[in-house]
Length: 301
Length: 232
Image (cartoon, rainbow over all chains, first blue to last red):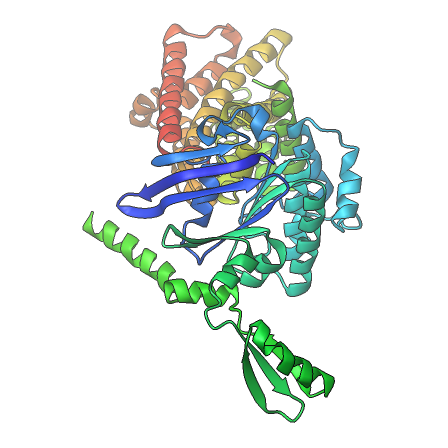
């Protein structure tokens, strides 16, 4: 399969603050790729570079084999973008929002009702968007990104601020799009979302890529203990090595119905991130650090 | 330039304005005021169509400027403009769409003001021509302020003093000759003078030059604002 996106040694800095340091990755067709990192890690900057909104200081980014700095209308028409700010016309209805963008994309209006039905917004199609919930706005923004039948979707924190039910609805829609062959590049700081949704992920911290691969592979690579923790029905616990030598003992426990639960010591993505950076994804430390640096820079000026 | 994109933006803007009282009132306030004042107040010795020319000038200095600024600043603040530009809409298509929409809307308002003046056919054409030029100049200043401003609040803080100067100088210059000496360098005063001498049906060369120079200054300001701040 061809690489839909490829980045090679991407670097970018704002004044003397390095936002991206030598970022490299490839994304294949029909893949869901997640970029994970805390606020201020450089996720949105990377999306802006990939979509041609921002010119990188160094390195190369290619979309559909073409340099992201020279994307033409033809490439843009194959891309759907949903930024963290949704950019919806709030006084207009959901239908009018999509109709306007259908005109901009030169696509037929006939596909709008089906799209609204698919995203569960058909009943609310005539209501002004400012009356929508956050989840409905996110779904409408996603529907707009798909209006031009984009083969590549850029989603900047698509489930940010959503309740679990609304987030799950978005996940279902994204999985359906993947089935249809759409390549999806999404940013998130929700590790669980990345684990259940993404084929491959990259962990970003301080502008550097600290890990890249499938969530399962990453967790496996960092499973240093490689043990099974067993809780028995009487409440006692035992830890076994996750190797073939433990099999007879495990079978014995199973045959005698002694086991209440079995867990592997495989770390979660959150654990991996903490191991690699010394802090969690929801940790505001890095973000606050960046803000302090920026304030200092301005004070100096 | 894609005409379909400009047309789509124009249609969207029309729908949006019908639900946006802040913008809508700019288009209908002065035409309505003109109709009311011109019919309600008759004072002996008052120049013919005094309220028509006065409100027409204020309309030129206010409505296109505030409407254009508010539309651009709101789109920038709410990030709808960024999404639009990412959807392959070119900045000039956006400016053309919004600009044509505001220009035509203001011309409809100007036609109502013109109707209140009971002008003859040639005078009406002249009136609309002068208004069209004045509205265009205001549009350019509005585009510059809207582009310069990141938020609607920031835009308002610039628009209000500019709008006050452009709209009220022609009125104040009636009563004060010193102000008139300064006001003559502004296009709104020249528009006011042209409308007052509508019977002549001609634009003085110096008036044309002042309006033209004002438009060049507005274009330069717009260029600087666009280079410095961009649209997104």
